[in-house]
Length: 296
Image (tube, rainbow, N blue to C red; front, side, top):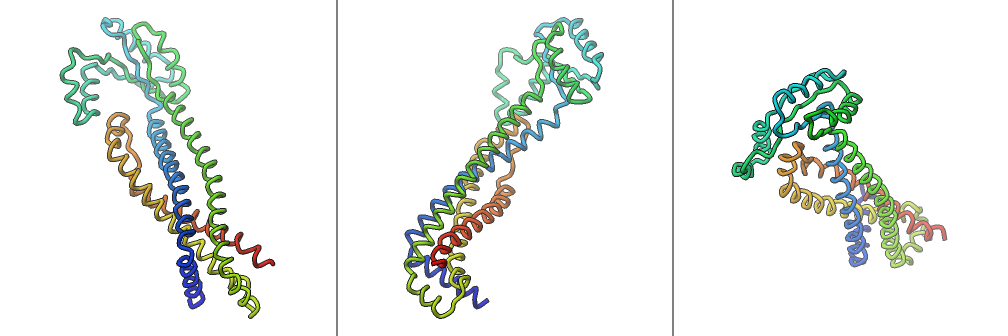
């Protein structure tokens, strides 16, 4: 404990003597972690949307041509029910669809009350046994007489998967670049401190101090930089994400019938990730900066 206390005391002393350089390092690394944090929350939410929509991959919505006769509607239903792989078919009247839409719009549902007529068509919800059947039926249903449009969630899932992959690759590339830059920033900051204490370190080495004894305060300095940056970046990410979810979170839930990941849950996980990244950056940067000096 006395050794750790000495190292921390020396680390804070170094920070006090080089406030400007340490402040700049914390600011730069915080900005980089903030970018990673925004990538992270976007990636997590897109994956959640895809996972929740994928649960409904076995439902195909078949919209009918407006003013269809009952005979045509029954014919469409018979054709759908007779398709191999179809579990069951339910009819959704246009009035019921409009009421469902009003519920989804929440407080803004009253806006639909003044419509001159119901713009929604009658439709069928077709429940299929597996994804292959759903894909095949979605392609063939458009040619059935009386069918106006087909909505199949797999298209949305595929698009969300592409977006998720793009964000994931972008996050990895950004993380790699920003981590390297952060390590360089920390290394230069610690290097400046090493130069300021060059004579003191030389005396310590002359008196028999080991390399790790000399190195420890600088490593702790790097760790402190990383932890401060991680804490600030996590706090800023929480404030931004929480504000965004307050503004549009309820709208996303109402329109897409999916929820966004709670800010508190994301923040805890993000803090752990940032702390690990920050500490690793601090240690690597410190070791790199002092290694050349100790090898001389």
